[in-house]
Length: 195
Ligand SMILES: CC(C)(COP(=O)(O)OP(=O)(O)OC[C@H]1O[C@@H](n2cnc3c(N)ncnc32)[C@H](O)[C@@H]1OP(=O)(O)O)[C@@H](O)C(=O)NCCC(=O)NCCS
Image (cartoon, rainbow, N blue to C red; front, side, top):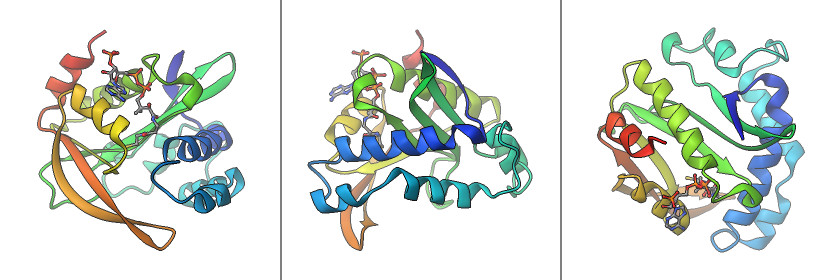
């Protein structure tokens, strides 16, 4: 599996990984009807809307956001895991969205297709994102997850994260318990992720 920076022409594959992984990973958390209503094309529309039309298809996502981000040095790239010409996973990370939280960086997304889980891909993507953040001077890292996403919680906690916040998140007009896991030290996380 190769990890690389995502380009705009990866967005359809990223939308597919996001949609399929939501449907499998959240089957016991979100209503079946809501998950069945999710479509790759709707996810792609939202991603394209988010990143704008101006970017060239082959540009790296982080390069384009650097033009509009108030802190260009911290513009959030995406990374993908690719094998045999197919994208199996992706993640994104950048500055914490809530500045009141005592962590300066946030892992915004980390999704591995069910068929590729348990092969070290999640760890490899997290290592890439954490290395990128450390090189840009970030010191701590936060990630939010559904409280009932026990597999993700176990994954993060096995890597040294601690549960640091409990809140709710609205999905499809319904509030669900949401939690945040945090690492005070990205260096300590990277030590745990060392191959
Ligand atoms: C959670 C997720 C990102 C982990 O990625 P992955 O590629 O499956 O995990 P990896 O193979 O890289 O790492 C496995 C490690 O995580 C730990 N781990 C993973 N799942 C675990 C579980 N259910 N219980 C305990 N430990 C677990 C293990 O300690 C394992 O460590 P090891 O390699 O020393 O045995 C991935 O499974 C995923 O995308 N899940 C669905 C979507 C999701 O929940 N994303 C997170 C949203 S916040």
